[in-house]
Length: 303
Ligand SMILES: [Zn+2]
Image (tube, rainbow, N blue to C red; front, side):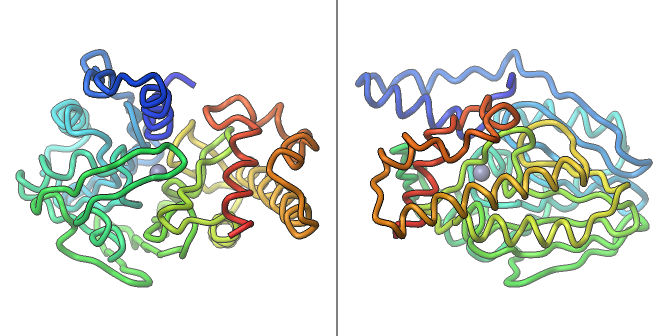
């Protein structure tokens, strides 16, 4: 996988922390990042740069953006959006609080965009955070970067000829996830409840859980049909058939790890039994390797 994302960066930060050299993280370079624009429908596009995949909805009512990657990329993101619409970025919705999805909020907020997210996104962005799996501290964001409209269960937008259903799925990748369903265009942005072609990172310290990710996956499956275009939080554009396989993978591995946790097995014993082996060829080559995925599930299911 070429595109760096939060998890790779967090993982590097873990290595860096171990090696005792924290300066590497500050030297993150975005100058070579190019934003790739993928057209899904006449009004919906996906932008891939570095960090979480961006969704863009354009039309007469203005630009509606889903997530905004990292602050140093804002100018590149804006110029990519300008190539598909002459309207301003009016709304930005964050799928969750991780900094590879909200890093552009401060710049876009300063430009006048209205930022919207689940209420737990605002809560977490307002205070310092710590992600245990990566031993990573994330400082609170400035006020202008915070969502100014929050929701608990769902919020709906009527824009650009579409009905945009934004649904909270609880305790999935984090405790503030939203999935965004463009009803008329038949497109779903899953946020980080879905990493296409990879084992997902689940942020257990932000109250994420494998059971919540599976519930979110089943919700997404209930909305999708064979023509739905699925924008994952990370990885390439996807569809229902691929998403179905991802859901089966999650369920199968969750069941096996859960059984072994109940039997009193240690993390090491569970990892040795290779509960992911049937899926490693399809999902094991991302940045969360099979042992790391089992470790995440163990830390969740043994709570
Ligand atoms: Zn994330």
